[in-house]
Image (cartoon, rainbow, N blue to C red):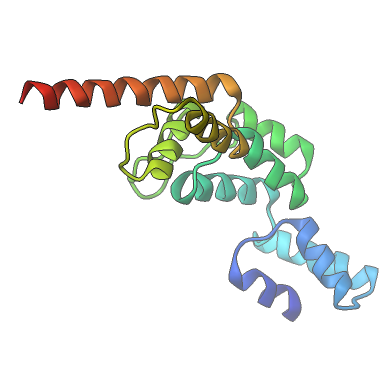
Length: 167
């Protein structure tokens, strides 16, 4: 129990991560199951809660596409049924603090693009624009969402240029 508690001190963990850590520590099967059952009863092991937490952390600190967030959760041992519930929005909970989090995939892509560009205008060069698009694809956004975010950014840049010309 002490090993699991120290492991949980850093951040929430999935059942799979805890089980793996306890095996690495040399605990026997009966002790692992008893520890996981006790932690689940106390509310410290909850894969659905972990999935919500992970998705919210991604939205808050480093927005990523749904596909990449799901891949990260699979790597951490979140069961398929929990991923499907997260995808369907059944696990969604309103954020406790009132900071606005992205609500759609397009909004996540737009925020990721803005952070990537850091106030610079969207590149006009075709190759540079492709690199920016591929950055968003690597972040887990589907190509249609990427094209929409790039179109929106280009329109915003163009509107900004027209405003400067009128001044």
